[in-house]
Image (tube, rainbow, N blue to C red; front, side):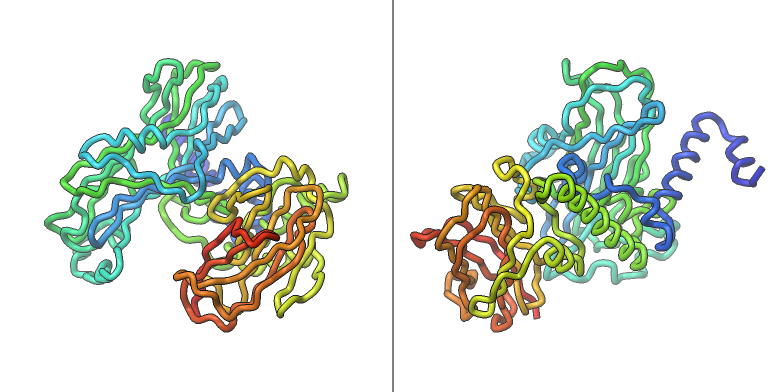
Length: 453
């Protein structure tokens, strides 16, 4: 028997559970680039609708004059008799900001917003896992954080370096509690997590408190649950202090699990290595391609699930695989899908940061990442009708509304997605707007993008 198994054999029942989960985390999250693709499965990526829902995270911000305390929470999973149940958060438009209470104390506004979807408690549930990441960041132009290394003298916590923000920059104490709530009567079934960040009026390091505050992947054990009851997870927020700003919340969908990207073998914050990131990116593309190819093979149509932005370098593969380059107009390349879209009338809004629903079933999408490198911006226009839309145009203006020198696009929109590559090499660094106009000249959609050179 190995030393590890001998060690586990000596543990108490509770310790066995904890060490077993740590071992699982290690095996899942800290694999080499060679075998990473064999360890992660397609449910890690937002390819199908239910996966996109699961990969939504609530981001909370407590902003002060020169610093911001942040929390990112999501990825709730229940474990029961070998089964895993993924519980998505209640869904809001991506990156739509919500303001919390301005008064000190429990933030009832954000607490009521920050819930999961309602679920039925399965039988024999004994474990719940979730992602919760606390961090702090400076607000420009204040750049002095993390530089006074003398503040770390004598510190025994390596993560204090990430919280060395500067004396007096955090003026409120901010607390986050994660609860399991009974839907029928509103009572709390279990307190899963309680963590916070103290104000730091007297020292440069912001002190954290509660349940493993520097960890990002968390495991909680459950007992005495009534299977069949309706329940939901709730993120309860409290702010104590004189700051007049209050907290804010927004939700964002990610392209993979934060727990894969930001966790080391002990559950603490750590970035994925470049090699593993590249392998994970490739696996996302291969899983997407497999799903698309199998759908095309079975139906001769593209899936109705809109593709999410792929990691850098894979957008061009997607475009060349599933689109034909039709022609060049004023130096701008236009792409048409090789296959019709399956279930055009049921295309759902997935990520409002990237796709904005506009008039008459037409949807405008920024495909290329922003900030752009300045050579071109890729735009997707989704026509959910079964017939072409005639006489549309796209143009680029500055953020102040001035027409740029970039060549406009004019043309027709076939059913499905049309992809444009608009040349922007004549533009300087800055923020610009793409306007889409119909045949009458009315602007029916606009999207903002950034160029950095």
